[in-house]
Figure (tube, one colour):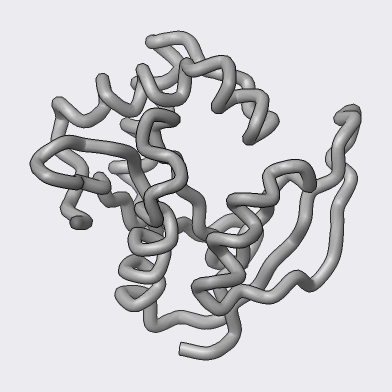
Length: 148
Protein backbone atom coordinates (compact mmCIF):
# COMPACT_ATOMS: atom_id res chain seq x y z
CA UNK A 1 0.00 0.00 0.00
CA UNK A 2 2.85 2.46 0.78
CA UNK A 3 5.83 2.94 -1.49
CA UNK A 4 8.47 5.57 -2.10
CA UNK A 5 7.28 8.58 -4.07
CA UNK A 6 8.06 8.34 -7.79
CA UNK A 7 8.34 11.33 -10.16
CA UNK A 8 4.97 10.62 -11.84
CA UNK A 9 3.23 10.69 -8.44
CA UNK A 10 3.86 14.43 -8.09
CA UNK A 11 1.28 15.21 -10.81
CA UNK A 12 -1.34 13.08 -9.05
CA UNK A 13 -0.57 14.84 -5.75
CA UNK A 14 -0.90 18.20 -7.53
CA UNK A 15 -4.40 17.39 -8.79
CA UNK A 16 -5.47 16.06 -5.39
CA UNK A 17 -4.27 19.15 -3.49
CA UNK A 18 -6.01 21.45 -6.01
CA UNK A 19 -9.48 20.08 -5.14
CA UNK A 20 -11.54 22.96 -3.64
CA UNK A 21 -13.63 20.64 -1.43
CA UNK A 22 -10.51 19.01 -0.02
CA UNK A 23 -8.94 22.44 0.51
CA UNK A 24 -11.98 23.54 2.52
CA UNK A 25 -11.93 20.37 4.60
CA UNK A 26 -8.22 20.75 5.41
CA UNK A 27 -8.21 24.59 5.56
CA UNK A 28 -5.36 24.42 3.06
CA UNK A 29 -4.67 26.81 0.22
CA UNK A 30 -3.80 24.95 -2.95
CA UNK A 31 -0.39 25.63 -4.44
CA UNK A 32 0.08 26.50 -8.10
CA UNK A 33 2.03 23.96 -10.17
CA UNK A 34 5.41 25.70 -9.73
CA UNK A 35 5.03 26.04 -5.95
CA UNK A 36 3.75 22.47 -5.67
CA UNK A 37 6.72 21.06 -7.59
CA UNK A 38 9.15 23.10 -5.48
CA UNK A 39 7.43 21.87 -2.31
CA UNK A 40 7.87 18.23 -3.31
CA UNK A 41 11.47 18.78 -4.38
CA UNK A 42 12.15 20.18 -0.91
CA UNK A 43 10.44 17.22 0.77
CA UNK A 44 12.35 14.66 -1.27
CA UNK A 45 15.66 16.43 -0.54
CA UNK A 46 15.03 16.55 3.24
CA UNK A 47 16.94 13.78 5.03
CA UNK A 48 14.54 13.97 8.00
CA UNK A 49 11.50 13.45 5.78
CA UNK A 50 9.75 10.20 5.00
CA UNK A 51 7.46 10.48 1.97
CA UNK A 52 5.25 7.67 0.71
CA UNK A 53 2.71 7.35 -2.06
CA UNK A 54 -0.45 5.52 -1.02
CA UNK A 55 -1.41 2.96 -3.66
CA UNK A 56 -4.68 1.02 -3.83
CA UNK A 57 -5.26 -1.53 -6.60
CA UNK A 58 -2.42 -0.01 -8.64
CA UNK A 59 -3.71 3.58 -8.37
CA UNK A 60 -2.02 6.40 -6.44
CA UNK A 61 -4.76 7.59 -4.09
CA UNK A 62 -2.75 9.98 -1.92
CA UNK A 63 0.38 10.47 0.11
CA UNK A 64 1.53 10.24 3.70
CA UNK A 65 4.70 11.60 5.19
CA UNK A 66 6.63 12.56 8.25
CA UNK A 67 9.21 15.29 8.84
CA UNK A 68 10.93 17.20 11.62
CA UNK A 69 9.98 20.84 12.28
CA UNK A 70 11.02 22.87 15.30
CA UNK A 71 12.49 19.73 16.84
CA UNK A 72 9.26 17.72 16.62
CA UNK A 73 8.49 14.77 14.37
CA UNK A 74 5.21 15.45 12.54
CA UNK A 75 2.98 13.39 10.31
CA UNK A 76 0.59 14.47 7.57
CA UNK A 77 -1.36 12.93 4.74
CA UNK A 78 -3.61 13.76 1.82
CA UNK A 79 -6.11 11.43 0.22
CA UNK A 80 -7.82 12.20 -3.08
CA UNK A 81 -11.46 13.07 -2.32
CA UNK A 82 -12.81 10.27 -4.52
CA UNK A 83 -11.13 7.82 -2.08
CA UNK A 84 -12.43 9.28 1.20
CA UNK A 85 -14.39 7.13 3.61
CA UNK A 86 -12.76 3.81 2.70
CA UNK A 87 -10.27 3.49 5.58
CA UNK A 88 -7.30 4.29 3.35
CA UNK A 89 -5.98 7.15 5.49
CA UNK A 90 -6.19 5.07 8.67
CA UNK A 91 -4.26 2.18 7.11
CA UNK A 92 -1.66 4.53 5.60
CA UNK A 93 -1.06 6.41 8.86
CA UNK A 94 -0.84 3.13 10.82
CA UNK A 95 1.67 1.73 8.31
CA UNK A 96 3.80 4.87 8.37
CA UNK A 97 3.91 5.23 12.16
CA UNK A 98 4.98 1.57 12.32
CA UNK A 99 8.05 2.60 10.24
CA UNK A 100 8.93 5.46 12.58
CA UNK A 101 10.87 4.41 15.68
CA UNK A 102 11.05 7.96 17.02
CA UNK A 103 8.44 9.09 19.55
CA UNK A 104 6.52 11.20 20.11
CA UNK A 105 4.96 11.87 16.71
CA UNK A 106 2.78 14.97 16.38
CA UNK A 107 -0.06 16.01 14.09
CA UNK A 108 -2.15 19.17 13.63
CA UNK A 109 -5.65 19.04 12.16
CA UNK A 110 -8.08 21.88 11.59
CA UNK A 111 -10.89 21.57 14.16
CA UNK A 112 -13.71 21.06 11.64
CA UNK A 113 -11.96 18.08 9.98
CA UNK A 114 -13.46 15.50 12.34
CA UNK A 115 -12.74 12.62 9.94
CA UNK A 116 -9.02 13.34 10.00
CA UNK A 117 -8.98 13.68 13.78
CA UNK A 118 -10.70 10.29 13.98
CA UNK A 119 -8.10 8.73 11.64
CA UNK A 120 -5.32 9.82 13.96
CA UNK A 121 -7.18 8.68 17.09
CA UNK A 122 -7.70 5.23 15.54
CA UNK A 123 -3.91 5.10 15.08
CA UNK A 124 -3.27 5.83 18.75
CA UNK A 125 -2.84 9.62 18.67
CA UNK A 126 -4.34 11.57 21.55
CA UNK A 127 -5.59 15.15 21.54
CA UNK A 128 -3.18 17.24 23.61
CA UNK A 129 -4.41 20.76 22.92
CA UNK A 130 -5.47 23.39 20.44
CA UNK A 131 -3.69 26.17 18.59
CA UNK A 132 -4.98 29.31 16.89
CA UNK A 133 -2.81 29.94 13.80
CA UNK A 134 -1.96 33.61 13.41
CA UNK A 135 -4.46 35.40 11.17
CA UNK A 136 -6.65 32.34 10.64
CA UNK A 137 -10.35 32.06 11.60
CA UNK A 138 -10.01 28.42 12.72
CA UNK A 139 -8.27 26.46 15.46
CA UNK A 140 -6.06 23.44 14.98
CA UNK A 141 -6.34 20.34 17.12
CA UNK A 142 -2.91 19.15 18.30
CA UNK A 143 -2.43 15.40 18.61
CA UNK A 144 0.46 13.25 19.80
CA UNK A 145 1.42 9.59 19.60
CA UNK A 146 3.69 8.55 22.45
CA UNK A 147 3.81 4.74 22.35
CA UNK A 148 5.51 2.73 19.63
